[in-house]
Amino acid sequence: FDDRLTMLVQSEVAWRDDRRVARLLKAAKLKVSAACIEDINWRASRALDRGLIATLAGGDWLRHARNVLITGATGSGKTWLACALAHQAARSGFAVLYVRAARLFDELQVAHGDGSFGRTLQQLAKVDVLILDDWGLAALEENARHDLLEVIDDRAGSRSTILTSQLPVEHWHGWINDPTLADALLDRLVHNAYRIVMKGESLRRKNTEEEAAS
Image (tube, rainbow, N blue to C red; front, side):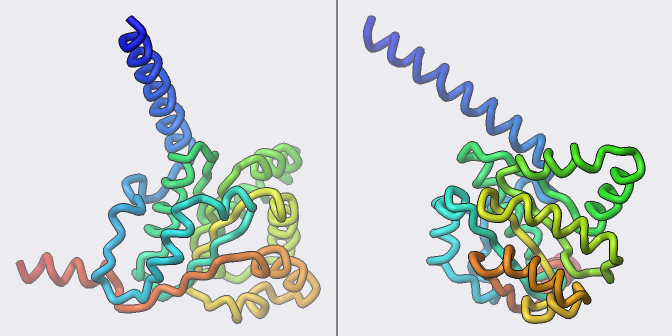
């Protein structure tokens, strides 16, 4: 009887864990929902550091509210890797949200107009892992700079953020185009962050060429 009871309890715990992970992944709205650490293509010439990826997979960066900055050329796998890290975080019980940076700025502008800006900031501040994809892709307007500082300031030291960008980190200050705000933003984002620089040719182009040749 004790063995059967133990099996029932373990089954119930596993079922609840699976449901929670499924709920977290649904709320995450990941662009690449199937991406996971176990499926990383190490053969591609992207100079990925296995030790660093293993460290991130362990999750201590989340518990210490550290950020991850992923840079590299278009098609190098930045978004996929960000989603894989977020998927791992959800499996560990952390709340995750994916959003393209440009879309976030649009949503915040709308929130200013309908009076929901404060509530939107509170919701973003509660997310354990916020992915801002395509950071630095388009020029920042003045109101977007201030909104971005509000978002990042609420998360600094308490929540983790993953940024993906084609721009190298050393060019972010110029992209923000406001020395004072840039100093404030980068101080909150960069000093405690893990950096991953993706190298090599576009994986999308490579996959298309391989399909055409097969």
